[in-house]
Amino acid sequence: MSLYEKIKSTTLYVYLYLVLFIFLLSYTFYRAEFIHNGNQLSYYFKYYLIFIVGVFFWFLVLFLNEKKKLLVLISATGIIFLLYFYEIVRFYAPGILKSITVETESNEETKYDVIQDLKINKGINAVPSIFPKALLEKNLIDDKNDIFPLGGVSNRTTVFCKEGKAFSIYKSDRYGFNNPDNEWNKEKIFWFLIGDSFVQGSCVQPGEDFASQIRFFTKQSALNLGMSGNGPLIELATLKEYAAEKNPKIVLWFYFERNDLEDLKKEKSNPIIINYLDAGFSQQLYLKQEEIDKKLANYINLAQQEMLSKVNSSKTIPEKFLTFKKIIRLKILRDKMSLDRGLNFGIDPLFEKIITKANNFVNSWNGKLFFVYLPDKERYSGGKIKDDRYLKRKQIIDIIKKINIPVIDIHENFFMKQNDPISFYAERIYGHYSPEGYSKISEVIIKKVEEFKSY
Image 1: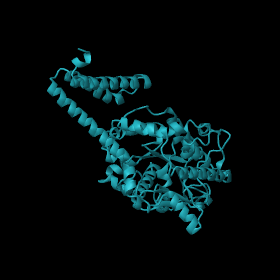
Image 2 (image 1 turned 45 degrees about the horizontal axis):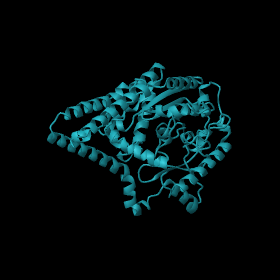
Image 3 (image 1 turned 120 degrees about the vertical axis):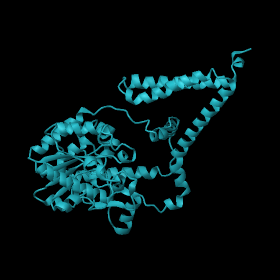
């Protein structure tokens, strides 16, 4: 009698599960000890625990009688089926929903539709908002002798984003930022705002962004130099390129806890952007706007052609493989259970260096730099409201205080005082603020600056 005939089918399946968990445990060990050199135990501990328990569990199942083995196998297989059924449904639900509601979707304007309508029906030569981050991600500017734009197309109707009923559309200023152009004509600038999409004004209407609200409440001049996707190094570059000519009294450096540190990883790899760590480096962009506009126009044309070519194209083999890989790894389910969070690579020492250089730069004309800490919406929807370790909040604030920069903590000074923090986010579902959120937070910022000045 062969070995296979001696091993009953139920026992064979138990061995398969046991081998699977041993493999997953070994893979976890490989990732933790060889890929991450044993520095991410806090992240991999949960996976160690799950797979070690799984190995012992299936080892013990081997000693059960055939009836109990069969019951365990049916239960385990049923659970796995449900997990993958959930994953597949959640993964393909957006595409399925879109195909079912195609008639409704056809009436939903895209950014491209809005731009075409403005051009064709209203005679307005509109453009999409172009971010420095997009140029980084496409690796379009990696020649150190080239110029790297930090703003958008100048003096143009700019279609930005939509989180609600209408797109955010504004007229860009002479350098491509979201300001009334005449702000640059003022001899003295009081407020200067540096940051990402929150500062740019996602996704509210003109007059509802931070800079506009500060102008409204204080009756003082304010310039908004924010662009979506900006991280610390691009923000330092923007500060050095455009603040030196105006020597603003107050510089607000907005820090978004969700992705600013992640953005820095990509920024520091660019041969032009990294040069802003040198004290004397400048591209003198304020003198090169015509060249910048031409470069961005070429990028817009390329992006438009790429978009149109992909409308009816099918997924490539690498894209299909990536989809399969995400499903096999239960990517959505793990994210929902927060199992994929916790990798801690520390804070890049470059971050502190950047903030220090920014502070010294502002101090050089007797200006004052304020660090505005913006919390992530998930802090309030995910039960992290009192977790100072979440997204390295305490570490970041400690670094800023060590440099002796005043911190305006929007989490502590505003959201912690609200009964319903989510109500200040757009439609209660998006990651940016509602018009009321921008207004209330602007009031907090103004008040805190006044308090610091009175010390």
